[in-house]
Image (cartoon, rainbow, N blue to C red; front, side, top):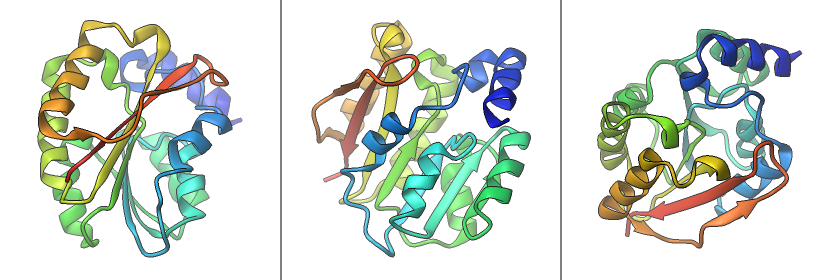
Length: 189
């Protein structure tokens, strides 16, 4: 049922959704698994979609804020995870949402947004928000689909992130996802 909803919303807004289906559980485990999230750690998730990554985050901590712009997805998230905080809003307003909710500084930021295909006009406000959200010791993790990894927007995003933060883990390819995806991680030291 959720996969069909995802596909319908992709057809309506392909650039906003960025994928024809949810991420695989293999990608979700790889995205969250080795982040070292402990109970009580604050996590911000940008673009949680229908909650594939959220499920794995919730196993580790309940100090959480998910920011989802798609109203239908936001309702699904509220229903699936009533114990977590969600905002139906924009990632570029992430810092303001986080401050309003009143969580401790985020130790981890997980991003499911299709930044690799977004223009600089969409990327730059999100980068500015990330710069404000990430404090010393925090980690940002996202993924880029293998087919879009060399797109100019994808390369630009990685270059901008490298200028702001320090890459802190090797780029890793997860083949068991449709499509395969590279996992990218940056830290603020």
